[in-house]
Image 1 (cartoon, helix red, strand yellow):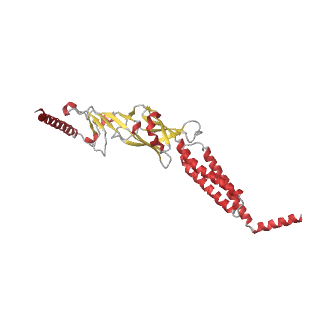
Image 2 (cartoon, rainbow, N blue to C red):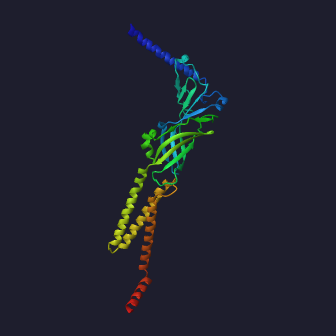
Length: 323
């Protein structure tokens, strides 16, 4: 008998649960789905929106073609309003519901609405970071550090709501250990993140450190290639060959092109630097030296192929024989 009654009790409980949820949904349909959960314009004017940023909500750090750093993250906003409230006991004790149950997800994708009017919304935003160097110079390049910040007060939340307050929080490097691979692809690592409030403005401040291993690896391989070509160039100079001049010119021209390509590749990544690193100065000197060699060899070949040069050389030999 008990086995027969138990399924009916469970079915009745489920029916009550579904009817309570349907009742709550019907209650929420009395409000306009195009309007966020605020009472009125006056309620919007005094609404306080709290900002919460967590390390696990950061998607990545990237650099665009203009060498500006961008951060992608979820910015969770929460506020209280007396417009959307209910008594949980009247609707089967539901203390919170998903915002998708009522609002249009493509218009105002709220994440959660609680019975006391607490609403949470976590939109995905992309902030451009304004960075400046730390210290007096970039002696530690490519492992230099930058202090970047962005204003998070102007988040477009909903109609007429401007006052936003951010709870001051600070996250250290240990909070971002799992993000090493994620940020390493951009060539930068996140050292710390904190929020600051000054007057009516809320700022997100982050410390960024350049990935030394990645930059050194990218620079080391081409520099080794240039060094090998320099050795080959010297070997061609020391080895007697019939067509040595043409080989030397070809190698010198290749050195110039490779060094210029290297400088072109690395110079955009140094937009935040106040001084060129030593390795790029070496490349610049290599370019200047090879240009001098290239010009001198062209001049020598030009002089050797000139008829006047041969006549002057023969005349000088005759004068030497006479003397």
